[in-house]
Figure 1 (cartoon, rainbow, N blue to C red):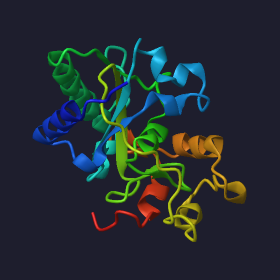
Figure 2 (cartoon, one colour):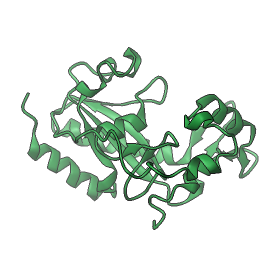
Figure 3 (cartoon, rainbow, N blue to C red):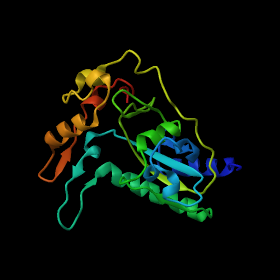
Figure 4 (tube, helix red, strand yellow):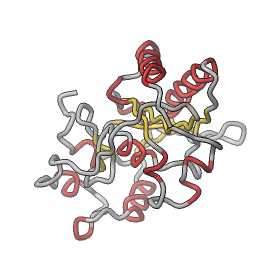
Length: 221
């Protein structure tokens, strides 16, 4: 398969025009997902003939963007920053449609592993806090992905980094002690987080972000 450098440049330029940070735009080759993840987390599950996974990130420059509105019977729950990302993905899909390509925005459930997709696209690496760490913004980023049959130029996967080698700040800061023996435990993290939601209002809450705040990567931002 021949990948289209011109189309890739045009899409990156378009992302810039709609104010998506170029450091948080990436393209992952579906081949890297094979033998790594279960079938429901494979790009091919969501689009026949998929050639590229597009991953879009948004910098959490304000903690309020990470808040969840719990909703009610008429309106379901939603996260503020995720609504921004869904809108961005819809604009990218329209761009690809106008170029003659199919695409689909992936939901969270079952969806793709977003942090891992970002690492496969070369945006950053998975840190000790089990979050994607970008060189510019650290872990203060949220992601959404879409799959497309457009043959875009893909990034090089990032499997490791020197940032976490001698650093335990996120582990030491974790109020849930969710790193037994230095290994992240999702259940411990979730149990603490949901039991200690920070209520911004009656309907709006923010999940624990101690490990994000502790990370020194991207602190200058």
